[in-house]
Image 1 (cartoon, helix red, strand yellow):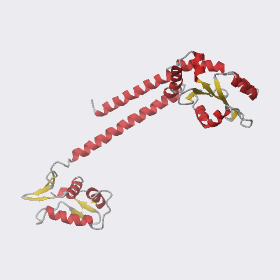
Image 2 (image 1 turned 30 degrees about the vertical axis):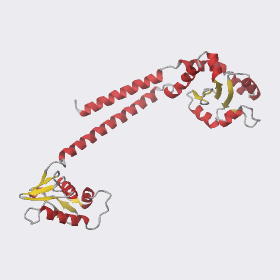
Image 3 (image 1 turned 120 degrees about the vertical axis):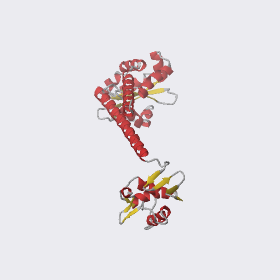
Length: 313
C-alpha cells in the first residue's frame, strides 16, 4: 500500500476512535449524580417559593433549620445576586457567599444545567449550582448528604465530581458532529502536510547527496575527501568552497544571486561586506584552475551573480 493510502487509513481510524470515544463519553450515565440531583430537585424546591414571595427572612430561617445546607446564593434573571441581600445586615454564613462570589459565578456559568465542585481539600462540603429556572448555588454538607442518600462519602464524592471532569454536556448532535468533522479535517490536513513535506525532502535529497562525488563539467568534487579533480590536477577545498560549488551545481545554467550564495556559504545571519563573496570566488577559481587550462565552472554575470554554465561542457 502506498504511503498516502496508509496515512489516510491511519487518519480515518483515529477519527473513528475519536467519534466512538466521544459518543461513549457523552451517553454514559452517572447513576450517583442522577440519584443525588433527583433528590435535591425535591429537597430544594422551597427556595423558589420564598424567592417568588420575596421572603428573605423565611428563606433564611428555612436554611438555618435544614442540616444539609450550609449556605445559599440566588441570582435573578438579570444575573444579579438577590440572596443573600447585601444591603441588609450580613448573616453569619453570608461570608461563604461573599468570600467565594467570583468562584460561584464561574461555577454557575459551567452549569449545563448543573455543576458540582469541592468546597475544601477534604471535600467536607460541596457546591451544587443549577441554572434551570432561577440560578442557585448551594453549599451542601457532604456527611449529611452521604447519610441521607445512604452512599459512602468517598463513593458519593467520586460520583459527583467525576462527571464534571470527564463527561460532556448534554448532547447536541449538530454541534457534536460539527466538532468531529473539524477534528477530522485537521487530522487529514496535518497528515497530508506531513506526507508532502516528506516527499519534498525525499525529492530534494535524491537530487544530490552531498556525501557523493558529483561532477561540474570536467571537474569532479569529492565531499568526503574535500577535494576536486580535473584530469591529473587535484586540490583540497574548504567547507565554504564546497557549499558554494554545491549551490551552483544544484542550479545549472541559472544565475544564482549573491544573496543566495551568501546564505549558502556564510549563513542567513551573516552580514556581508561589499567584497566578501567576490574575493572568495577569485580565490576559489584559482584553486579550481590555477593555470587556466580548463573551461570555467563559475561564470560571472555582472550585476546579478554567478552561474555554472553546464551547457558549455
